[in-house]
Length: 157
Image (cartoon, rainbow, N blue to C red; front, side):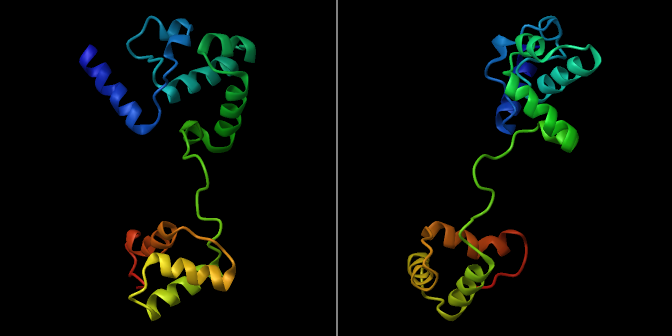
């Protein structure tokens, strides 16, 4: 089964759910089974939480046997309680949306792009900086203008 396991590991890596510290997992479930994979981060987190709940593990014991830090386990518990299994999936780090692009700035940007179709992202960013005193990277301007088209909505430009 080495070929299917490496295929699974590639899929886990692509999904961002590959556990690079699988060697730290000492729980017997993950040592003697083809089903339980210490590289599968979501499965490992779920089994950690199951051991806490069903097998009455302490956080310290779960940390030791499943290879997670105690803060990671507490976070997984909280996310699982709030969001269910989806809470165990990794999240994109960093800001989820541009924090400088307030609705008024975005509306003005779209109006500028409509009224000045020959202006590039650098010029539009400069105009926004002068008007709103907000410094935007030209790539942020590009992304903001193309966000509607990306979602299948008619473009404003």
